[in-house]
Image (cartoon, rainbow over all chains, first blue to last red):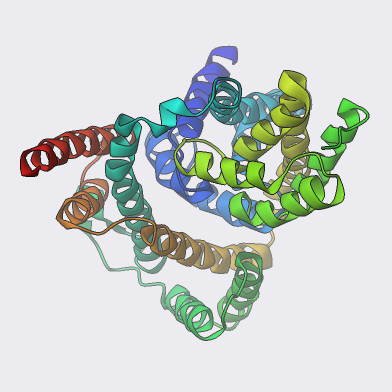
Amino acid sequence: MILELLKLAWIFFKIGLFTFGGGYAMIPLMESELVSRNLIDINTLYDFIGIAESTPGPIAINMATFIGNEAMIDYGFLARIFGSIVMTTAVALPSFIIILLIASLGSKFLESKWVQHAFTGLKPTVIGLILSVSVGLMIRLVLPLVNIENFVFNVSIFNYQNLIIFGILVFLSIFVKKISPIKLIIIAAVLGIIIYSIS
Amino acid sequence: MNKPHHLLELFWEFFKIGAVTFGGGLAMMPIMRREVVESKGWVTDDDIIKILVISESTPGVFAVNAATFIGYKIGGFKGAIAATLGVIIPSLITISIISFFILQFKELTLVSYAFYGIQAAVALLIFKAALKLSKKIHFNVFSWIILISSILFATFTHISVLYLLLVGAILGIIYGMVENIKGARNI
């Protein structure tokens, strides 16, 4: 159990270390590190992200707390709390260490051109990863049996309900300026209830 | 500049910030600024700008970056710990409580319907985040090639995202070196 927890903590440490541009950048990392190793299934991951988005607090911390708790689910109440604390610490530690070094030693390192150059390569990479993850999720919601990574294009299940929900949400976010993430999520939840109840 | 009377005061200030900000990260900044600059006067606007710039070019969780930096400015190492714990603990409490109920809760049919909708919203939010981030890059042939290859590799292969990020960083450094050499020649 401790070994499992440490492995998971190491993954979260890496996620904390490689997250750029806000909590969203960690989603591709979580999909690649957690889902592909069967540490969490993909639906649970995105349900969690939905909740993490609609509760206060940094998304990365919310996600770490969730997954730490979920990982210890077989070991009882205290173990689950402990799991959350370990995972949250792991994801926050890289930020804490790096910023502490910068705050005490100055930001010379950051101004070095090597770091700046690395960022010119990292930024488009991160954006590409986030785009790929979001489009992948959209496809999975509408055509759940399609698996692009394994070149499986099975379209026998077609969730038109999700397509309708998605269409309405896109419409709203284009025509209602500055709709906040939490409002969008609440509207989506209500839409889900209505559309799936009547279909 | 003022100083907090006690580390607990610092902790509590960041606890409140962590407890009320939705969406995390940058959404937290205006609230943090109002609390630690305007109402408490612990740090200046310069420090806020500094942490924004530093966060642009360091990895990590933005809220933790900001809390660590501002906490350090106010109370050294202990201050950094107090502020960081403060900003993290509200999440830890809220999400722990939700975690204990979520499984029973998700078995309700209506809740599972709600989650279908929520996933659609999440997909859209992630997509919008990518578009927003793309405003921060300077588009040229190099960044387009990296962007498109990143999409292709992430979509059609099983290669770990960590490796893709490493390759992105290395290519950025190589590109920077090549540009420097070119620049030197032109002078």
